[in-house]
Image 1 (cartoon, rainbow, N blue to C red):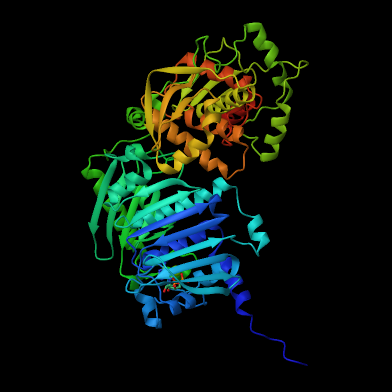
Image 2 (image 1 turned 45 degrees about the vertical axis):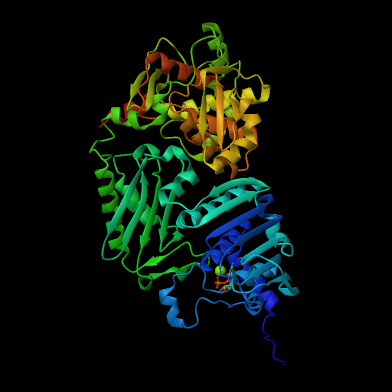
Length: 607
Ligand code: ADP
Ligand code: MG
């Protein structure tokens, strides 16, 4: 029998390696930016076309490559960064495996132009499918430019699995943000489809943060600076008011490398204990400096995970130093969330706004439709038909059945869910409780209000008849470039909801009006930021744009927990909820209400 084992040709081996290193355009961006950093660049420009699907180019003024090095750089395991095993324990460069360029070359078209600083001429190399197609001397600036086109041209399955442009662009800006945050002493520029998205001059870390995340963060950042025997901890953390409902501005770097660590994330979280509500995420930009010999950054091919030798120690130091920083800036009073609501109100943006989010006046098109007493009965007739969710009945199957059953049916009796002569009461600053014929109904105010707003905005979007509430004095808001780009792309849509926003350039917008019935209060900027963030987060779910917008507005504008409600507001929520087509579940998937039956009480009181 003949021998059957063969060595894979390099081109195939590289394609396989590429599968691990290059998942999407953003992975190319990461590798190219890191190479430019390793080359000692002072200024790096990233130029993207069509979210990287058409082309990704990085231009730097780093040390450049000789002709031989330029050719060599596309070979697998070709690296200038380590030469002996011992070097692995002292890695300070971003790359060291020598597989990025070889991998990219296997799945894209590359053009590299590079020139050493002490040479007059540079060199150009064109690579297709791992083969050098052209290699010639050329005039160019010192440094390197690498352009990657038609990514995954020969891996159709990969190409097919790329997400929408918005999602891929978001991954790219995220990589760009991580790299540029970690290197404020280097200037960065990023273009997308000829739009300048970021222009970041060499700056202090604080200014880099403000350039990236918006000037609003100014005076909301607390410095961290702690030296311990296992790690130096520096950076900035956000004051409690910068905490958000979506995970977002959370960055940890170890030896200037962005890492993801639930463990350290948890340490930071606990430093904020009692300062922010449990469902919010603090903002932080933390840099740990540790001896490279005490970490293993080699555990993950894309190197965002890390192993520390002194993990527990680092956890504790981190937690203590952040607490210390928060304390120094007197933002950590020892208040208990459960009892002190003033504090929560002070630190929760939405609580500064109008309580219910819909008005009782007649000029608003978002308030619940006016229904007279008789009308109410008509509308709620169908409710008796199905079993409303009870405490004991929450299996997913049951919920689906409820959803379908919750349609109006003239032939059945109302269950009296909206009976207005029963007075509601408020419990735990979160639940509205009201007696109903079958027992006790408990409504989650936030979930319910989200549902109400969601259906209203969806209707507005479908009918395109928005009502706007003019600002007495138009206000200007300032966004970070990433969110600004997104807002720009949905501006017309968002204005069709009753916003009147105008692009004012440089990532600022003039707000002439907001949807009637939604009071933006004093924190218009943050409200819109949150709305856009929610929109961005939803993009992953591939909702259609209307659905996403309605959901984002609902979630960012709904009344929150820990908000005291007046009887009239509770009544409005109850009415509004049962006017909804699907009152059971909030757009973010929470149960809006449940009914605890009489029998349940009887059972519990039986010994
Ligand atoms: P690694 O970064 O792990 O060494 P890469 O495949 O990313 O491997 O790059 C291979 C080599 O090509 C690098 O070690 C470096 O010597 C060279 N190189 C890549 N990009 C640049 C650049 N922008 N400027 C100078 N040299 C570069
Ligand atoms: Mg590299």
